[in-house]
Length: 344
Ligand code: KG4
Ligand code: ZN
Image 1 (cartoon, rainbow, N blue to C red):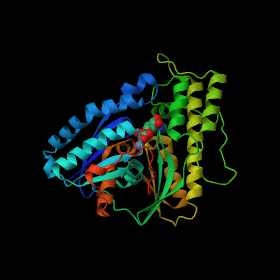
Image 2: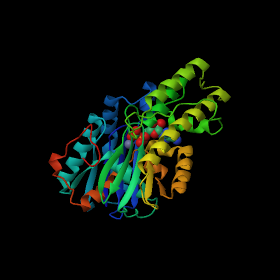
Image 3: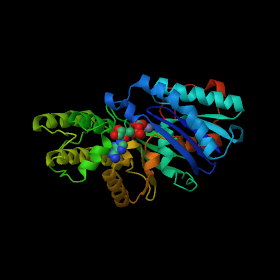
């Protein structure tokens, strides 16, 4: 069994995954409630919370599976990208555990964890990785499409400003929805009219298929201000609020699908395309992604909701692939990187 540790942002997570990629434990201590009063993640608070929660979670995961540390085959830890103080808590703990028990330690890129998570299955071994696949990772901190060809990761596009999840969260915060806003916008959009407000699809003069969400965010906030779109705790959501959420969500998804279309233009039919990251929990995105892939004759692989948001199972799973290609590190020399592109 491989122990996975994830502390890159505001979720402390510990997982136990078999060498075949079957998830036996995936414990998550979410800090959402702690950060909610601030409307976003406070890095210093995140680090302290990881310190409090990490080792009890490791002990619980092992105890639940009746395992001793000595019985593990390896330890995989997120070593970047993320909040540096938060990462250091996980990395230092993993180093101590690996060194103390003489187990191999593997340093995993958090985004690689996400981009492989579409191959993990609940209550089953993971699927083997195909020779060629694409993966879109959309979360609160990242929006990128990757192409993986025989294990080599290429970054096909990136965001020039905000991440997709940031637009959900910041616009939601502006209208008074609780943090994080994504799931609330998702829920309200279900009964809204997406044609009420329209937003331009950004295109770059240089033709790059990059994402850009800051114009959409600014426009949405301007509309919310002009039209007085607000969400009051004690009131039924208004039609205006639902229509606003539906319009915003649909514009975000339009851009995601537009970039997918461009980036996969020469993908052979049947190529798997994975959708993952926190925003991949969005119900409209899941539906539209699936029908887009069907139209393009590509195989849609949508990550299980539990593996979309930050979790240690995806870190252990990516660690297994890295170990197979000889990627174990010297336990005492694993660094924490606040920035780190997959494939670098
Ligand atoms: O992957 P994740 O847990 O953390 C990061 O690495 O950022 O993603 C969190 C993001 C937040 O922006 C949150 O609002 C968004 O995922 N999110 C959603 C939904 N569930 C979570 N966005 C849209 N619709 C959802 N249902
Ligand atoms: Zn993430």
